[in-house]
Length: 545
Image 1 (cartoon, helix red, strand yellow):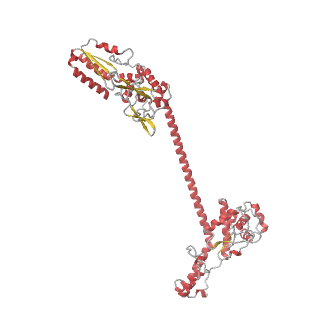
Image 2 (cartoon, rainbow, N blue to C red):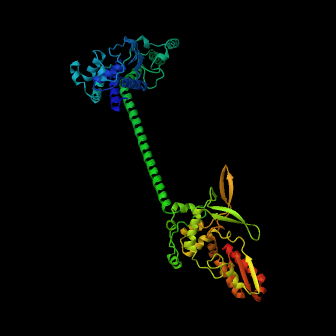
């Protein structure tokens, strides 16, 4: 396919042929262009001629006909209207679609030689200068056009000709019927003034003069304007064609620029997404930002109370990364152990029931090995050394049921009560607050609280898959090693409140897990109902607090 410069040069060459009223084929254009220094293939010349004809660049005075030549080929001949296409003769019209300039013979004397002499102003003796480029050919166009304009004659009308005598309506209709409108190249055209030698135009001119619609002088002026239009139409059409081409190039350039901007924006957006993904990966590798709905609100708070932790002899941990390092596990594994999901495909606990001594069953939740190891670290490094009141005898090293019963020996009245659902009544929020009171940051306390709690779950099946659906809030599981120690820390406020009440009535108070025992003398015996009411109020306060 010819490039833009070659195409424009060939188009200018063709326009010069049109201005000279020559008949030509694609082979003539190819040889003539090559003789003028324009290296163009035959197929490109054929396509350029077809495009010029289709777009009307050749003007209304040119048409295209297929002619059978003596060598058996049937090329398209582009010729002026009125030229008999069968009279066209050229020794070069049998040129095949060769793409190699050496395979094309030089033009013989005839049409191409005359064109070359007319366009370039030289004969065969100047053939050595045939390498002149297409631009020199274009620069000669104004002079050639001026010569052609000088050769044209002004259009005049023969006012005495019988063809312009008055015509009757009957003659007018008869003449109109004898004219084949579809054979006229000017029928239906509004952009041209038909020439005076057109039979239909002559008939119309004669009718208008007869009707007095126009004078012969005015009619002559109209055809003079039409001749001027025909004279400059090829140049106008070429300029219009070039303008259209420039417009298409501008649109293509604008689309290319838009495509480049779009690609740049797309690349920029992709780079931003990539940076975002990298930031997320870095953040996921260095911190924990989300551990589930309703439990992740404090993960951005990473400031612990070092003074309080030092005073209690606890490990100083500010961030979740430091917690993972202290526990000796990866941050991703810590996130996996602490993550809360209302609908999970797996769980960290194995649940089973054991019979109670007083009847019924007790649901126990045994943690799986990885979670159990993390809970053992929390118990040994944080919870085991936490002090509790002297009244607490359950889950405290060195104390037990015997030490819990000894203070009540010999008392007149012993009152024993049991807290219902002791572990399930202690939720995640209270456990997190307990770690915060020890001095840990909200972020570390959140992770510790999630590891030490679990939501009651129901096993369901959906579409062939098994899920564990949470049926309540996260609470202390019965079976985790951290639950007893945390329950003692949470119940410390309840113990202090009951101790104050017992001191007022001269009674003794002890607690073993969820068993509350109060003993005393006659004062307690006289206030049994009141004492039970105070216990209930204190227990409810513990549950709500």
